[in-house]
Structures are given as C-alpha cells and as structure tokens.
Length: 345
Ligand code: GLU
Image (cartoon, rainbow, N blue to C red):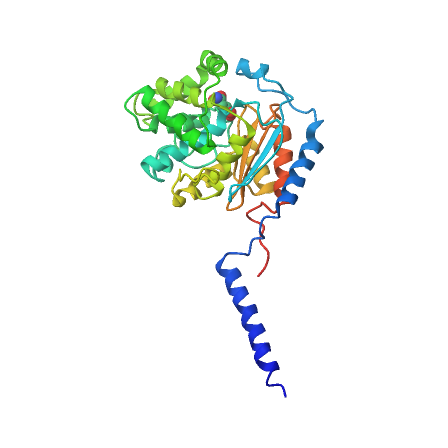
C-alpha cells in the first residue's frame, strides 16, 4: 500500500538535496539582499536618524573645503543588478578627494597588472596619518599603500600617457565611466588646493628621490590634485562603488571597467586603509571595504551585493564624515551587507 508513498518521499528527498546542492554551488552561505522595500526603509531610517546630528567640522586645510555647505546630506545605494535607491540631496556635488585614490589604483592595476602596486609602494597600513612624511622615510617609500598620499601620488604617476593632458583625460574618462556620466573638475577646489599643497609637493619629490615616481613628480602631484577636485554627487559615488561590488562591471551602464580578477586586490587595500587611522574600527563594525575623502564622501562596497555612498561634509578628528559612517554602517548592517557575515550550512 505504500508503493505510492515511497516514490513521493524519494522525490521530496531528491528535491531537497538538489536545492542544497544548488545553494552550495551558488554560494548561498551568504544571505541574499532583502527586497527593495527593505532597502528603501533602511535608507530612509538612516537619513532621518542622522539628519539632525551636528557633530564634526568641514576640513579646512584646503581653504575652499571650509566654504562647502555642511548641511549637504545625500545617500545612495546601487545594487549589483543596477537598481538605484536614494534619499536626501542627490544634486549637490562635492569634491571626490581621496576617494579618487581607489579608481586611480584600479587604472594602474588594469594598465600594469596587480603586481605593479605592491612592487612599487606596497599594500600595508602605515600607522601614520595619510599625508605623513615619516611614513615615507621609514621604509624609503615602500611598505605603504595607494590610499595614503605618497602611494596615491605615485599611483597617479604610473598612469600611462604621453603628456599631461593625455594622462589627465584618461583618468577623468575612467572616473566618468565608473559614475556613468561625464564628470568635471570643481575649479575653485582645484585652485585652492594647488595653492596650498606644498606638503604633497614635498611628498612627491621624496617619492621621486626614492625611485618610486619615475619622472616629473610635480606633474604627478598636480594631476593628483586635479583628480581630487572632481565633482561627484552621492549617486555618482554609489555607482562607482557598485561597479567594484559587481566584479568591475558598471551595473547601470553595463560597461566592464576592471577585470573581475583584479577586484580582490583593490578591495583589500580599501579594507586595509580606506578610513585613515580608523580603518580597523570601521572594518570591525561593518566588514566593508570603503574609502573616505575630506570632501565629506564615503563609499563602501558589499561584494556581490551593492555599492553605497553618503555625502555629508562635517568630519570627525580622524577625517571621516560623521553622518556617512553612521548611515552606511546602519544601512549595511540592516541589509546583511557585511561580507564576513555567513549563515551556517
Ligand atoms: N586632496 C587631498 C590631499 O591630498 C585629499 C585628502 C583626503 O581626502 O584624504 O590632501
């Protein structure tokens, strides 16, 4: 009488086993991203929770940054399947500043291979501030990384091109492809930093003296200053981050900008040194490779899931946007964005 039952049981067992196998093959030890309504709710909550937070202050060592409206506050999240979620100010652009370092490093790796970065400036935390001269002196320009100024200016010097304009245009075009629209320089920010960046000039000269920057260190520093002055809004930044989350392919435009095999190294350096001296604390809280800039932006990458960005100019003493850190941590943690968070099989 149970002739009917047995095959049903077998079939059920077979389906369950197939599902498990499928889950294993698809790497489903990580929970999937919640639906769009949950993402929207997480963004709205973080926006509201921190809108009134009045901590921190604009950077002012670049005089024009002190003039930026501290109330600008925008959040954007772009999923790896190209959906865009936003709240707050999406129009106002701030200068990308140090977030640019990620994309110039990506360009160097694409042009010269992933070994080019560790072989020149290294991929280690310096334990010093981002524009430290001591850090250069300590290992003669080695044992550092492309997220701090000596490494970043050196990375800019490694971008291929026959002239200032050729190098600059290829950097700007590359950033624009990440954002999915033509980006431009905020000239007032560029002029202000170019007039006051003697310390970075000194760093560039030292990196040249130690053989890391081959030719014209002051040109490299000037192009670096220009790349830091590119204007971006929160949506631009989130799309740039989402391109890294999506194996190097811009999920909105579909353009492949970094070879998938080169993404790991970029995210590793972001995780090591993306949030200045608080990079370890940030990783402990969120697990997300991220990069912040003194213009008030932070990008973060949840690999395979989403890129997120928040713009809010007031910074904490470490140089990271106060609201951006809180909003990104809350949103990502609410959505299971931490790549170290795994559910047992
Ligand atoms: N252009 C800035 C500098 O080199 C970038 C600093 C930053 O955002 O960390 O000082």
